[in-house]
Structure formats: C-alpha cells, structure tokens
Image 1 (tube, rainbow, N blue to C red):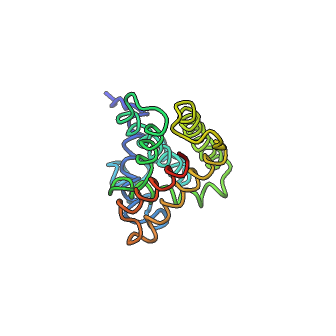
Image 2: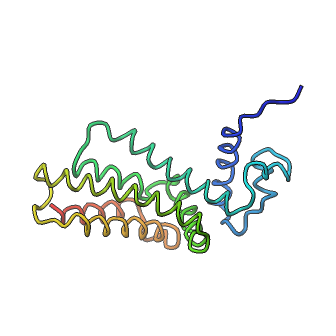
Image 3: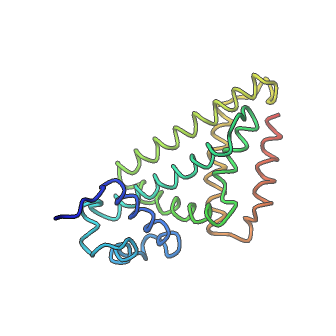
Length: 195
C-alpha cells in the first residue's frame, strides 16, 4: 500500500531543513543535494514540492516572515500604540541567534527577488503587510497621545521599514556592531523621537 504524504507538511519540513542550511552556509553554497539529505528525501525528492532553488528560497523567506509574525502574536497580548510597535520591531530585529539566522535568509532573498518577478511580488506583499501594521500602531499611538500630534505616520513608517532592513544587514555583515543591547538602544532612541 503506498504511503500517504501530507504535501503541505512535507513542504514545511523541507523549508525547515532548508532555512537552517542556508543560514549557516549561504544560499549559493547550499546545494539541492544537501537540502534533500537534510530533509530526509532522495535527490529528486524535492522536485514534487519545489521546482528550483528560487522557489525554495521564496518559501523559506515566507517561513521566516511567518515565524516573526507568530512571535509577535505571542507577545502582543493587549498591547497597543507605541508598546505594540516596540514589540513588533523587537521581534523583527536580529537580537538572538534565531533572528540572526533569519536575517541570513532575508539578505540573499533580496538578491533573488530583485531579478524574479514572483519573488519580488512576495517581498512586496509581506513588506506591505508590515507597513500597514506599523502605520496602524503609529496612528493608535497618536490617538493615545503617545506620539507627537504632528507625526507624519507615512514618513515614520518608511523610516522604520528602512531601519529593519538596515539592522538585518548589520547583524549579518558586521556582527560586532550588532550587539542586542546596541540595536535595542537604537530602536528606543528612534521611538523617543516620535514621542
């Protein structure tokens, strides 16, 4: 009797195996053979789930994005305004080994997204979701009197999105400059400017 395989669960297992390899070795240095071995499938066993490495890195990026959102949901509780914004940013910032590994996925993903319309669309969709979330927290902070009344939410949102990208790059290429306490101070300093 043939084994019944849950396609979605198997894809997730492959993504979990992939993201650790890519984070440790880099996307270019990670071979499909290594990914298959780590995921416990035969060499050709990846292709029913992912046609190529680009499709796999897209799924891996989505996994990292979802993991960040899940962490935020777990700590958010009844937070709103600046407290919710701070909590979200702290979940995105590369402040521990797990999030540094995530940054090591995001950075090579950008290179592929720049040249692949499907990956670029994925990136834009996910970043648009964070832009909306950040803007909503800033608007609520204004309503609560936690942020300056004259705060331009669109500009502050753009700053925070650029900030997120920047700290991920720093954590990967200049780890000595990316101590968690330093990155947290940078965030606190910027949030203070909005108050």
